[in-house]
Image (cartoon, rainbow, N blue to C red; front, side, top):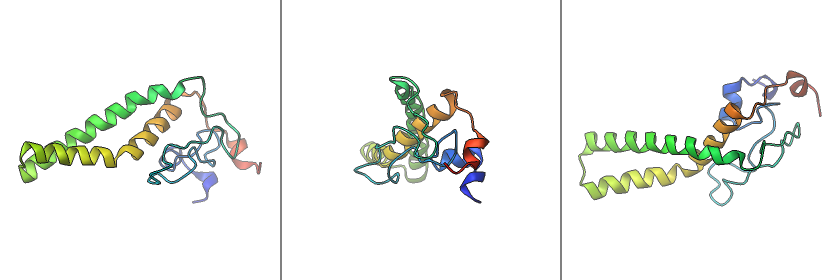
Length: 131
């Protein structure tokens, strides 16, 4: 499927701009450890300014918290039920899973904030034009 035909969910998963669904919100791959947090200020395709107001992405911390609580619960309960480890091993496994998921939670919490609360809608005319 060409990039111009991405659904909202596909654009979200691919970390694309909510307005044109073509430009990347982030400068590098998710698990590029040194640069996973480097975000584009504006969309490289349609020039949408991603930070809608100063401190806009501060609200993403709530999404990140929710993702991490769910991750800790799922990994913790699953590990306990399957392996029944010592408490220190359990804490180590849950901590390792949480640390490994940091790039994912950081990016997708920002994506949730952008897609749900920015007020930016998909614009087919921008998506179809060749800027």
